[in-house]
Length: 326
Ligand code: PCA
Image 1 (cartoon, rainbow, N blue to C red):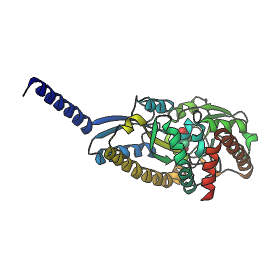
Image 2: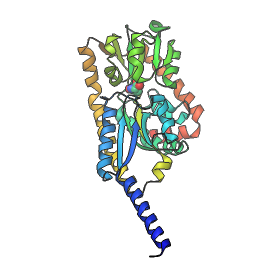
Image 3: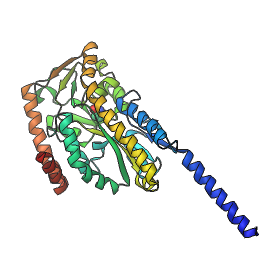
């Protein structure tokens, strides 16, 4: 062996070893925004387990729940910039920077899991194309149960709630609060209990899931079901990192993601009314929103859908047209 050949051989061995190490244990931290025991977070763990299995251990994902690695509002930027390779967040929380991502919080457009599925099928390609400009690839999405109101009083119409402090989770919910005469303040799910305990917020719109996670019965008396929309969380990867994976690894991860999505949506539907039973057991009243309140909400919903369409233009119309055609 000449010195040069020896050098080349050594270099090849080093290269193989590095590749081998990377392939056998690429460690990915996955920041997630919601409580450890929440079904979204539990499905993050299921996803990580499936990815480990289907990639033969090549990708080893560690989920970090409750905004513990990055706060909910920081997760998207962390993944876009590669500080974390993968993460999970509430999709319409990003509608302030990319309004099309508000597709799933248009009030009264899709008011059941089945309709929300149809709406996602109509929105998916447009949303994913747009996310690629944010350097993100969506692996799976999962719906929250329907959204309704938490109040510490009986509410028949907006006349009863003027000036009430309202915890918002995105721009659409802040808008609804303002239209109803309340005062919105944006608060992460992880901070809800503290906000209600200190009087920063006294009401909110959310699913039974988040009220259950945060024991809202300690602060409020009433839940009003509306099911105005079923918003989704999404799990996304940094596009540069995703594009750098070989096709087999991508396929294995997508299989894990597809299976997790099916299980997560089923769990969401299964738990929806269970959360309400827990509220009643803990002394809350759970009821349908009354006709006057509902009529106001429907009016606000129509305005918000028109405003969203004006904001996002033809892509939004294409989503609604495809949704209404099916
Ligand atoms: N829970 C999340 C978003 C939607 C939901 O049901 C939250 O309240 O932050």
